[in-house]
Amino acid sequence: MATKKYLLGIFDDEITLMKAVKGVRAAGTKIYDVYTPFPVHGLDDAMGLRHTRLHTAGFLFGATGVLLMFLYITWINTVNYPIIVGGKPYFALPAYIPVLFEITVLSASVGMVIAYFVRNGLSPIRQEPPLDSRATDHKFVVAFDAEELSGEMDNVKELLAEHGASEINEKEID
Amino acid sequence: MNMSEHFQFTSGQKRNAFILMGIGALTLVIGIIMALSGNHTMQEKIWTGILTNNMFFLGLSLAGLFFIAVNYIGYGGWYVTVKRIPEAMSMFIPYMGVGMLVILIGLWAHWHHIYHWAAEGIADPNSPNYDRLIAGKVSYLNKPFFTIRIIAYFAIWTFFAYSLRRLSIQEDQLGGVSQYNKSKVLAAVFLIFFGITSSSMSWDFVMSIDSHWYSTLFGWYTFSTLFVSGIAAIILFTIFLKSKGYLPQVNQEHLHDLGKFMFAFSVFWAYLWFSQFMLIWYANIGEATAYFKARLDHYPFLFYMILVINFVVPFFALMTRNSKRQMGTLATIAVIVLIGHWFDYFLMIIPGATGNEASFGIFEIGLTIGYAGLFLFVVLKELTKTSLVAAKHPFFKESLEHHT
Image (spheres, each protein chain N blue to C red):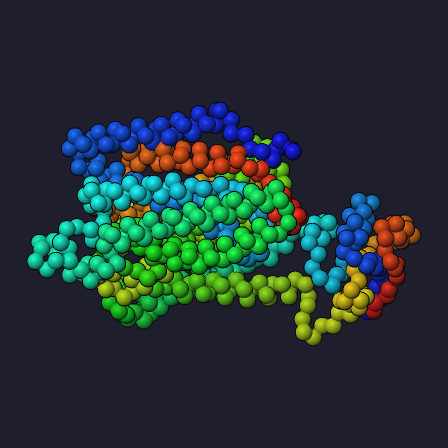
């Protein structure tokens, strides 16, 4: 596997980090990713991340699940094996609703979990070494793809230093 | 002091509120004249209209108080920028106390027959009015206890609303956290009291109309109606004030959270509606199904319409993130939800109070417009009394920085 090279700007707190992310983006440099020990509010907007489409997928999963289940129980209760329960008609919509509700939740949630893992490529057997292990504890790391930066590497380093990065590292990962 | 922090109730707005009230008063006077000249239907329409509107606008004002109390207890910070709106709404409680007093006077004076349990001799086996089912309930459903309960509700609710409001205004001048701490204690005590009274008031005012029928879920169901319509009203006031250039601190994030509340509690309302309906439908006990039979047989359109506009419409319209962040969509849905929940109360009350042939027409619209005028006038008047910004609230900064 080819080696990938990253430029890492390390920050001590999230306030400097936010300013740096905004500053770097204003200068037109593309950020690869940001790693923080805890969720930082407003960071996704500052990074210019596109909103996730996971909830749209969730809606479609839920809608598909509820529709299929509706057809299925209707078919069972009216065609395949009609029995009278509690004097109710075969097609007893109120009695279906709890089932339909549960299947909506189930198919939407399971579908979203699967879509999430398929899209981001994570799985229990996949190891993703952290670019800087301190980002899991107390440091805030802004990562750049060194290939994309190419000639601008020195400019970006300067920019990071200007915005208060405590360290600027380069890291290679195979 | 910044001008945009103080709401100016312009004379034009006052005039409009008075016009609305005037329409309501005119409708009522014409209605009373028609009733006195022997129009029996109109007499029933008047009392049903008064009770429906009392319940609806009492719900809005109680929701304001509940919203504040629940945020005190839950350490809510985001709502501080809009805090004055529910506060002003809660000031409407005593007005609805007067409204319910009218119902009480009517009950003692035999001007209306909304409450069947109040009929003479209902618990007397020798009377022609004797009703065995109601006779078993007279220890709760009797006129003196009913009167005491209602007076107690309004006295205590008003006490809490005024106390929380006073502390909030004091906080603006003094700063510090002592008002906040006191408010938290008051809010906690209020919530315990409201937990019981929000149920019992719905039994008293609404469920006892169908005296034979009862549902253990009814209190919760009315509570959800009350809360979701209250949130819709808060949203409309917020958008109104913003459109006039007030509340610059309120941004999309706050609207988003209010929208989430409206979405979530519309779903919650539907959940309770269905829970009540399905158990009764499934068990199929005559005594219990009578409630839904009267509504389904005689008001099928209203019955299904309420489900559509209180659940289906807000559910799909507020599902996406963007729709909750746009004032236009949010305001439209809030208006729809308010109309839907007005009809929700209407359908709870009307078959028992007026009968199976009741109609909805100009009288109901006129009366509701009058109530709305009074509500708007009182709430906007209350908003002028203090700064729109609760700037000394301990969570004010958090609210400014709020990000969903």
